Length: 247
Image 1 (cartoon, rainbow, N blue to C red):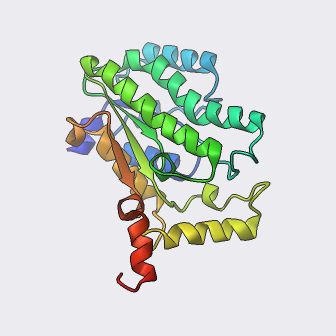
Image 2 (image 1 turned 60 degrees about the horizontal axis):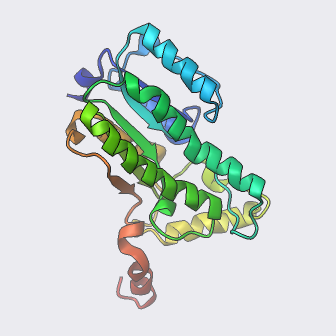
């Protein structure tokens, strides 16, 4: 059904150069999205003018826009007191304002049955020491709910996908606080906190995104879909069970 569904339809995926965004784009193309109109844009998701220009380009192309995936994002593993005001603003600008601008510019082009998927995180479902990243991912869930209410009358659904540990370049990215060694410890700590005891492949997240974009999720809006190997579902009791030998 999916390949027929996407035939002749278009979707916009941000952050599609690698990782989850690339996997989502490949999934859409394999499902029949209009490959003849594939356009790759190097753009700043925080630019309002850029989003307005893209909306006009899509309108002139005359291809129905049935999907928007707000996937582009950055991370910063710093606590509240370690984070500078400039770092705070820049991260929220990319992770939260970017999706806001995208929805604001493109929602009017989307017909009934279209779907928007915002990429949050397990950090947006629980506490996490990375202050700006956590705030942006919690905020994205709030934006999702507000947009879902507004666009329901238009027949456009809006949901979030909340990945846990994923095998992408970002997860091993050193920064001013985490060098390569600490980045490895961060990775292993995440894996240890995941009941399935591994990281997801990017394509596994893409599969969940495709579900939320497609007709099988036609009655789902304003929701969060954790794709985290049981991390948030297991919570603290997963770690306690392991420590006590009960799991």
